Length: 254
Image (cartoon, rainbow, N blue to C red):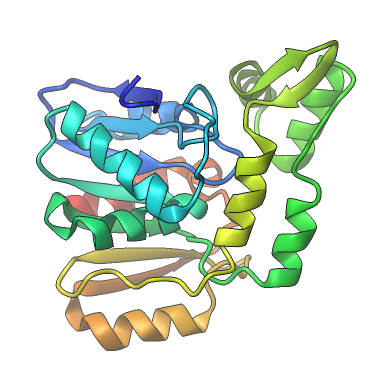
């Protein structure tokens, strides 16, 4: 635990650090297979964000607070600076961390960041954030619905890691209030990467989480420091194509 955040770490501490941030409702251990199979040359730091997983659930749950939490994680681990990868809501957190302490971030990789969430969409998801299932079988069915096409062993692993039995019912291991707040935060106008910070945007073209306005703004303000790659995938890019996603990350950070 680093100042309230539970941190999953993979690979040798002597290897170059790489921070990876999960999306809303997720947790850092979702990156275990990516780290252990495809990013073995890096020391992968994957925290559970505040209100998620095994981290502190106390508010506030704002993007600014998440960024401050992550800065303390870097400090507690003696990491002066590192590249940061953020998926979905984690991409927004990564952007705010880079704005808070640009000298601590050597590069940004934004995996289908949630920069184009519409208020009506956010309201719909926020109102269904308090998920309750009768038993493990229903939890597994819910996870299969959320992750279509994932192998059954991955579904089982996710339920074991990120669902918990409470008073005879099964719930995901996150604070519903934190998730509701996250959907509200996703409706804010997104910040742009700091000028001069190399940034790779990986957009899942089957989804609409990015949108053209953010791409245009980054190109206009960042010029050659900005790289945009479209991939023919759904939102969970690192699950659907872990090898391809890791290749993009490694080529960029190296």
